[in-house]
Image (cartoon, rainbow, N blue to C red; front, side, top):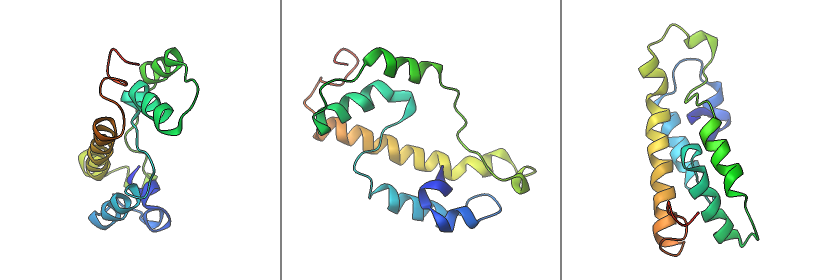
Length: 121
């Protein structure tokens, strides 16, 4: 995830992502109009529906996606297969924390209170 969001520079790395790749990805994350997460798909789609003024989003489909998805927080090259898993996903987890913070901020400041909460999907 960190490499992909960083872009070309991050994809060139052959070992575990570096702090520089994380910083690049974090900068790029700030350029995104909206950041949601798979685990909070229903909230993410609800917020997008509001922000983009979409007519409808099927909340059952969003819940099915979030419930049935198999998460793989990091897909890295075979050259890094022998590395410690914690080292491989360290920056992905940091970036995920930033993404969750962005989602929380959007729900808190850009969407009416309670609209996309557990009862408002």
